[in-house]
Length: 108
Image (cartoon, rainbow, N blue to C red; front, side, top):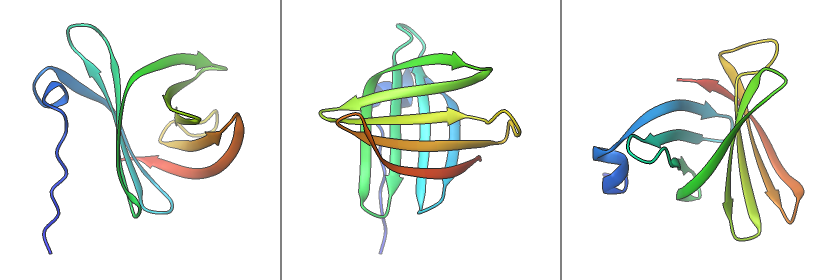
């Protein structure tokens, strides 16, 4: 079986990848940034399917950068590193502001 994961044209031609992680549970996440307008894009593949989100935000929290994306009542936070290890990270999924899932990640 062949699977095809395609990104929106803007991610292919006008955006560059700024973070690529592999997380426990089979979650592969890429964060892209549009060269022209700086928009952050979230692209994830996982055992349940693919998820593409735009209009993300980025902030530094205690020396670690976190990327946040919203999809209805869900929020996806991708931590770029930890205080102990810059090659590690975390994926957190929130539903109605309550944590639903937390997975350890590593940069790929």
